[in-house]
Length: 299
Image 1 (cartoon, helix red, strand yellow):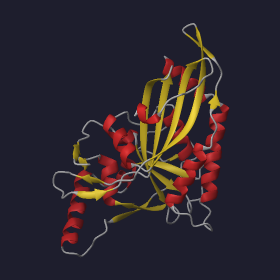
Image 2 (cartoon, helix red, strand yellow):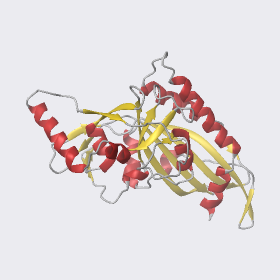
Image 3 (cartoon, helix red, strand yellow):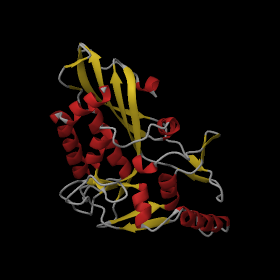
Image 4 (cartoon, one colour):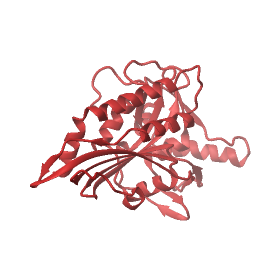
């Protein structure tokens, strides 16, 4: 019940929606072809813009006979970027990164964590209208979440649903679109558009590893995706495998807890591995003291 109250207040909050519009405008300016900004710089600017949004105090609400102040806070978490190893049967271990940005949403009641979900996002700038290059080994990880090794510990993710949290953020420098400056596609949507499944990816990765042994090729093969990367002009409320969505629309839906994962190991890996995490905290506190929560303790 508390989560639904907080979600409804957030959905109707004008300031939250305005902040996301400002974020979209900022991304659009950063994608000016004359500036030639790279993905890393744009991600840093997204984080800077996010962290500068002031706290939102939503209207006081009566919950179970007590008056609570409802609030929203915007934070960022900077971590050390580390690599992980794909440790899948039939493949030699592959060193890779996953995600250059994560979005963590936390709901609180009286400073107690109610719900938490995280989405992992890998950003790519389009190379031409409706064209983007995706490294194969990274797509394999983001689509299937195979077994991995990190810090000498083995992880298996057989029960997760990557469609809900594993996304590519396509920065539309060349694919002009009036609805959004950037778009979100699920990793599985991209794999389906490339007509790739788990077996075919493993076969291509094995071929690449054999070439590496013979010193014929060192870099992972990149896949040139040529599909409409901009969001459609009609209904966004379709499943992730069917259509791209505007980036800020995705952030809004993740804020409502419609998307994301609450898997403990995924969140811990993101905290250790992903360099930039934007954090949205929504809560209800007695009186007007707002949030007094340390992110690391909550994680």
